[in-house]
Length: 239
Image (cartoon, rainbow, N blue to C red; front, top):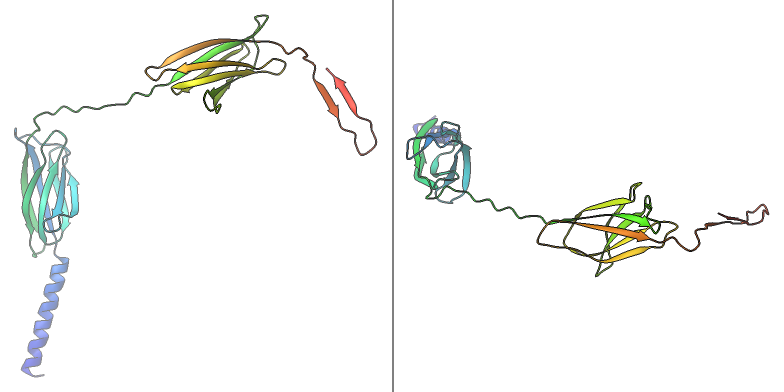
């Protein structure tokens, strides 16, 4: 083997070794986040961003001592950004991880409190109404198990409903603001509609209604049996 060939093999080996070392090289960035009073900023986030692309790479959350560790960082130049509610965001530029293996970069970050640390939470109030009442007959007796149905006044669309208890009482909850029609029904009684039941959109309210239902003129129920194939005659029963 001549000298030139040996030289080429040695250079190739060194190049390959350098490439493998670069690929396997990684660093660690660790540190502590403190406030201006030298107190730890608990559970702040420490985020690593690539300097050239401004792309998020990885991150960590501080412990109760304000300490963080970001492992397996590839060689390159980064921005270390720390954030916490009530504090101004802090960016540290040019955090460099070199090609040498197992490098540890240590940083101490001091964050300043924002001028106002107050947090305002605005909760939107949900307004709904309750419509409850009692269904009675014209003898002032409860109409047991009558149905109370709520329909939208404008579209006549069914919204919700309830069944009366044995005292004729019903309750319909979570009614959104709007204008409704309350319809009560029961076998043997005339259907009764109450118009313009209004639930206001400014406040939660309870609307109470007493409904008086009249009995139908004829409470009889006719059952008609169809003639069977075996020649039996129709049967009519009157109750």
